[in-house]
Length: 212
Image 1 (cartoon, one colour):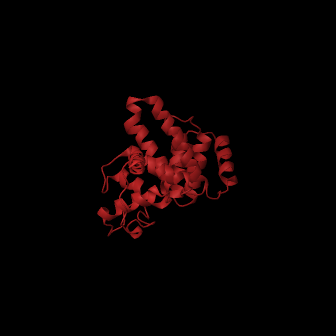
Image 2 (image 1 turned 90 degrees about the vertical axis):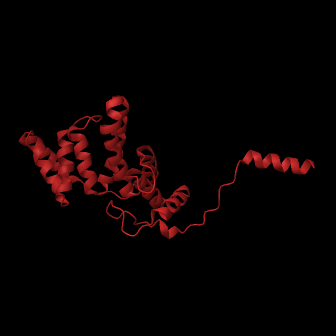
Image 3 (image 1 turned 180 degrees about the horizontal axis):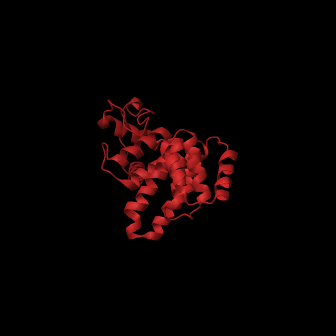
């Protein structure tokens, strides 16, 4: 009798057991968002639990997928906090697309949600966004280079720096990004020839880094 009481006490302390996952990892493919958009043919009723299971196991691609599902309200209620949380987990594992996406999501949240209510918290989000954008930009991601240039250009929360803004816009432009070219020229219009020369030298000296 005492033995069963001890076992029952242990089970109660452990709490309810999680249900066994019976899904298929193939329902959450690594390339579910190859260009930032959900690929055709994805069954969200299967993808969401599959991605959640894999994400809980530490799979970076699944964490990225789950973050974008929450960001877009795809198969789950739209939730910026959950989206950023999962994207951050993937970014911390070095997933390049996640590093850009968490940076972009933080900028968007700081500008549209947090900023009007709490400028101090928004500034902290923008500073974190700059960190993740820098990691992705350093690896040659043109979208992240444009985003980082924009943060240095005129977004709140980070000290503005024309040289850095020009440099990152120029690098994005060199990679074929049309927005980077237009924004580089916009920044150049308020810079002196000497400043432009310095910024061009920074861009020329830049070398991409490995996975961070």
